[in-house]
Image (cartoon, rainbow, N blue to C red):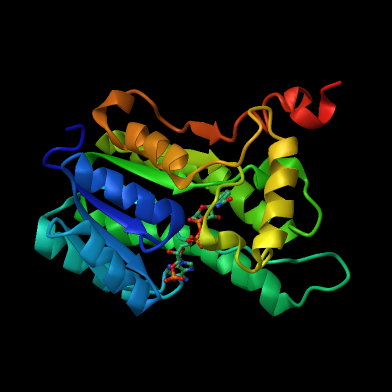
Amino acid sequence: MRLANKTALITGGNSGIGLATAKLFVAEGAKVTVTGRNRDTLEEAARELGPNALAVVADATDIAATEAAIKKAAEKFGKLDIVFANAGIPGDTPLGATSLEAFEKVLRTNITSVFFTVQSALPYLNDNASIILNGSVISVLGNPGYSAYAASKAGVRAMARVMASELSPRGIRVNVVAPGGARTPIWNGRAPTADAFAVLEKRISMTTPLGRMADADHIAKTVLFLASDDAAHVQSAEIFVDGGATGSPAGAPIFRG
Ligand code: NDP
């Protein structure tokens, strides 16, 4: 068991990558608190995760709610060894058709909340803890329509490096996992039907050297590595889990003759 006697907090742990990570953490011996806004999916997650998990309703954009959730986690399972700041939203913000409200909602959720999750967790974090922030390939790809999301995820990378500097004196590691397109409910808005999703999956697969979308588990396993003592000397790194989409795009199926 790679996380025996460890305690973890996962924001957005009731869906997709966060839920897959919570399951893996519990299987590896951790005690895990998951947060999210949706009470129903949180209850479902709690049932699935079993007695070594706690589910707490907490909107990550609400600092007081975040602090209260972290306090509850620490009261139930003890101080935290792992924080996975994973909660995030997509959101179209194309030039020419974007309101200030829509733009700021993405930034507030995907970056401001990440900062305050980490800040709120600090008093409850053990020395030598591991913090993992969820980034994205969109932070480097320049995909149209994604200005706010791309900025938020590039900001996550920049912020992780600052946090790593500030927290190294306590031995706390801060790293980023940067997923490529992964099969999770995050795409429900953009591809609401099976046909629309098939088109999306084909497009992502064609531009990914390994020729597929990720499963949430691909990302969860990398988060497990960063959370565990196996990554004891990994500090301020960003690991792209994207089938080569950012590192070797010329190898994608779309370019094969
Ligand atoms: P999901 O939509 O399945 O999960 C998103 C999670 O974030 C949900 O649990 C949701 O819970 C939670 N969440 C969203 N807003 C808030 C909020 N204000 N407060 C608390 N929780 C919130 O998507 P993924 O699992 O795919 O996404 C997880 C992370 O991975 C995100 O940061 C995303 O940007 C990133 N990512 C995903 C990729 C993909 O292709 N899937 C690619 C690159 C990065 P609830 O609705 O209950 O609040």
